[in-house]
Image 1 (cartoon, rainbow, N blue to C red):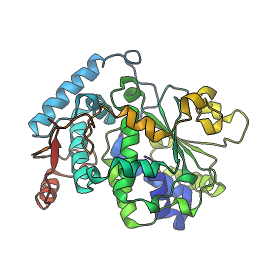
Image 2 (image 1 turned 180 degrees about the vertical axis):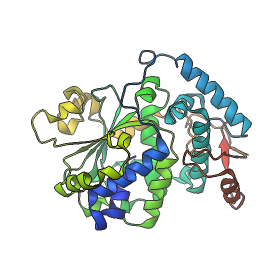
Image 3 (image 1 turned 90 degrees about the vertical axis):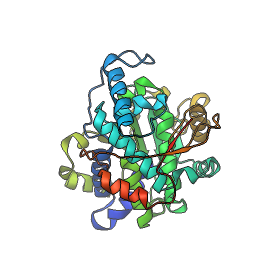
Image 4 (image 1 turned 180 degrees about the horizontal axis):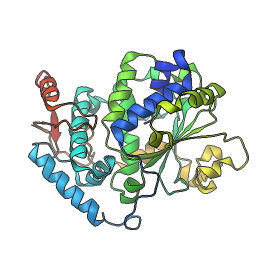
Length: 341
C-alpha cells in the first residue's frame, strides 16, 4: 500500500536500517492481504471478459457466506476483487470483508472528504502509469514527494484504499493478475518517514484489512543501506514473499524495461504525457465515479446507510475473532456496518 513503506520503515530504521523495516512490514502486510502470492500468471478468460466458472462459483459461495453471517454484501463490482484478495478462498474472503468493514468504521475512514484526498494527492507522490511487463496494472509512487507526518492516519489509509480500488474495481483481468506497486526511492529522506505510533498502527490495520490482490513490488534506486540490510535480513521473510519484492537501479540505460515497456512509464520518466501526464487523483476519482465502496458510496447514489450486524469467524487469515469484533462494536457509538440501498 502507499503508506506501508513509509510508516514501517520509520518504525524500525533506527535499529536495522531502512531496508529491514520494509522487509518486516512486507511480511506482515502480505500475510494479511494475500497469504499465497503466486508468481505465475493466473489462468482465466481473456482480459475484459466476464468471470470464469471458478470465479463465478467463488462469488456465489461468497454471497451465501456473507448472508449467513448477516453481513452487508459488497457491491457487485467488488465481489471479484474481494474473492481474489484471498485467492478465491471463500471463508478467508468473508473474514477479510468483515474486518474491512470494522476497520473502516473504527478509523472513521468515511469521515475523510474527497477534498482532503485531493489536497493530499496534490503533493504529486502518486503518478499515472500503465501496465508492467506481465500486464499487471501499476501504482507508481514517488516516495520523495510523500510526507505522511503531515496527514492524519485516516487520510493516509483512505488515500491508499482509493488508489487500490480505482485500479481493481470492476476489472476482471486486473484482479487476476494483481497490482504491481513501484516505489521510486530517489531522494528519500527522513522527512518522508512517519514515526507517530498512530501512523504505524494505521499502516498495519489499513494494509491487512483492504481487499486487494498485490503480486509485485518494485523498489527503484534504493539507498545502499537499504540493499545491505535487505541482504542481511531477507531470510527472515518467507520465500514466497521474498519473490514478490525486486530491486532495480533505474539509472542504468534501459533498466526500466524490466518493469514495463517504455510506453507504459509515467510521464516524468519519459512516458506518454498524453496518456499519463494528468493528475493521478483526477483519474482515480473518475474510475470510482460509479463504484460503491464500504467507506465511500458512489457520488451518483443518494441512498442512506442502515445498520447491520457483523459476526466474522476466526480462520487464521488475519481477521479478529468474532467475540473480539463484536465486543469492540458494541462499545462503539456508531453502527458497525453500512449497507447501500
